[in-house]
Amino acid sequence: MSLSFSADSPHAKTLLEWFEDLRDNRGDRAALRRCHQPLEVLFVPAYHHLYQKLRQHGDLQPGRLPVVAGLLAHVKQHQGRHNLAQQMAIPEQGASKPPVSELRFRRLLQTGSDDELFADLRRMLELLEGTANIFSLANDVYFWGDKVRRSWAYDYFGAPTTQ
Image 1 (cartoon, one colour):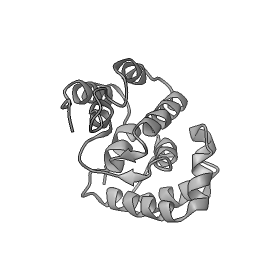
Image 2 (cartoon, one colour):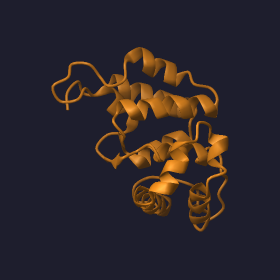
Image 3 (cartoon, helix red, strand yellow):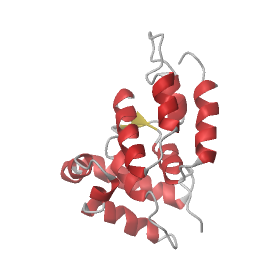
Image 4 (cartoon, one colour):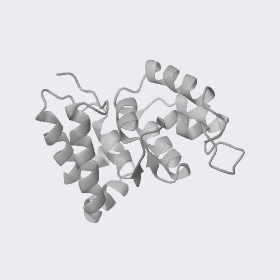
């Protein structure tokens, strides 16, 4: 079975269980939140719990999973209405500007390394007050590349201008 974090996949169910456990275990969450690079995530036992649970669904290449795990520690609330690119574009109620400026978004799309992606998305999650669709975040970060960038560009610039 190929890896997918779509909401109805076994990988997504495992990810959601791990995310909920992480919210309840403040020590593990704090250890992941202190990581400033994906390499540091590899030294946190909570990451390895996720990796082992996901491996139960078949062969798994870690890929960007450390980036995913490190970012999920910064998500306070899972919301499933919009993907992350749309969330960055839709202004909060009563606001006229999106939480993430067009310039900042364009820079994010030019991100090259996993370290840059990790740092940039951590900042974006702060701007979104820790609310994100964890399935969309996991899928897009794990498969980050030109296809995801194009999809995000369409989603950001095509997002509704109000909630």
